[in-house]
Image: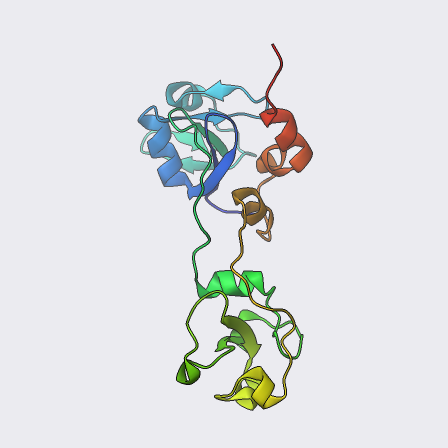
Length: 198
């Protein structure tokens, strides 16, 4: 289960990010978003509060009542598609390289991997997408402060900066809520987002 995760859509029903329940409820309360229910109807905060929180549904307790957790919300003010670049982070390098050592080609847990500069910093290598790869500890020790060629080790593939869309990032999550599927499935996504003819 995804815990307190809520999928956020823009006004065009495009998924733009995931937030927590507290932020989602704040957006609803301030009128900046509406809940998208299972019938794709838009429900404002007061109407959502009126709906009874059934015991078999996910809910949270407030001071004087229980409220169902919204799983998908639609922003009422945001129509743009996010064009953020992929952040250069350890997690994103692991995602790009699929938790696979780029030298021995074996998959590891995150704790079994570290990051390696293909061209070592001591040889003028930069810390960027094109020069950093996942490496298991034994391969990293074997390579040392040398280039792959000097160490006699071949790279699995040349590292590049990824260009992931928000949908691909959301689909790569190990688990997501059932209510998100219509907005993450590419066929349903196309259905909801194709421009309609007059």
